[in-house]
Image (cartoon, rainbow, N blue to C red; front, side):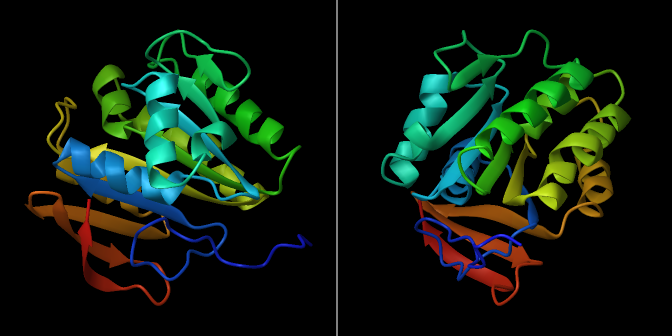
Length: 217
């Protein structure tokens, strides 16, 4: 049994704690708000590691985003990016984001490597809606999530966050896709932008944190 038993904290969010093994479906129609909340959930604490699949941002951009959420979190991240080149050991590139078999293998390798240095990890996909827009059959996205992303959470001590931009063009009905995905996740957070740098989160599935909360972005 792992020596760690504490819940995962969320940086600058009114969430008391997230149980290990939790998978969070994060949705909204404001990309900037999604990016901020995603980073606050995924940014690694001192004894943790972040593993991020970035579909529309380069490795350096994701590192800066994580640093903004939690001090020096970018240096504790392994990033698999579909935008830009590989950079050192911490940023790996994806040749074809639509090849989910290969992407899944690369992602699982990064999770396994991260766990060689620390038991605790936070995994994330930003944005899964981009993947859905690239593949011919959205069922392949479901298979990828269930056979790779969500499986890793059951194997180790971690949490996972998958972000979906509801305003993105995905070639499928967004409500239907989210409803189908939601059954595989333990929790969901919907973001509603309410003003300049302000939003309301609708939280379900996170113990002790159910309901609506207002946040500054």
